[in-house]
Image 1: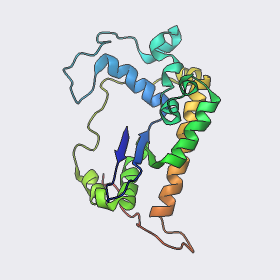
Image 2: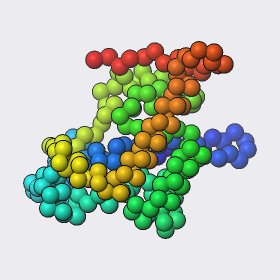
Image 3: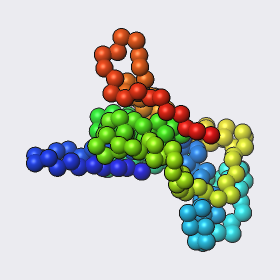
Length: 209
């Protein structure tokens, strides 16, 4: 997901880029089962792999194309850009370029596992656009609108196999980099620290059970 805001205040201005990323293996597994079972958003829509009952574990064991780790090469090239090297799976230059772009060109990149914190940071940094977003997220029944149906978590053996791939290692490195940067931003904006100069927003909200 990428959100782009362009503010028109009478003078030319750069767009504001915001994004969310997900753990690479979780993303691959979810998409694998989505193609077979769909999701709860349009449960009656027949997907292109409908009827295929091969599990992700079985797919990895057989070395089939649907679960090829190269299919995880998505978030690195997205942040890397349009250069041909960005789309070459496992390219180290692409990973470093993606990290550079993430820091230099994005106002905020969150992770799906910390969605509440992501929204709260958005409210803190762009109150004009996101005022009340945190409370809305906490109270809304559609906070997580789409969920893949009939998804089975991969076995430890499958996880170990996938994690041997250079593509997984690089995609995961980008994810960990983004997570660490997000925590840094969150800490500066939302958490009171000793001797801090100024706090924009104090993070005291806890999602109710």
